[in-house]
Length: 202
Image (spheres, helix red, strand yellow):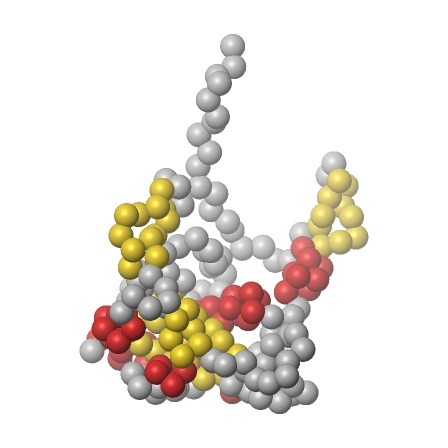
């Protein structure tokens, strides 16, 4: 007799793929590869969703994380540095993919939240900011004809420790650029790792 209870479905740990894997039908390879899906799905680097993931990758490369590691979408924070610093990455931009009458006003989400444990599928009780450091990534370029998020000189980064952010922002859900500039100075890509370590050690 089959059990009426579902099987014990554990957390699936993804592994890095090359992009050369084929779509198959009963083990017969089609002409389409995983890299075709990536190209179809991820080519608009200016869109909000893709830009956010790209910003996480940019920060990951700056702090020296192995690019073979796979992004974990469900952690309570975005990145863990080699030094053990928990990092939350947020992004904003003046230019969007859609039609605009004017540049977007810059703000970043800083909403406290309950942590979700993917191992147990249980939400924690405490509503807070779970990272040690926030990295606010601003795609500062304002020329639509030449904007390219892969050009790292088109970005600037603001790093704030979570205690400082919480003292300044309290339980607010967003922070605007003018207020962010009161507690952080912009740095370039090459300065990210050093600034993250400096801010955390203060």
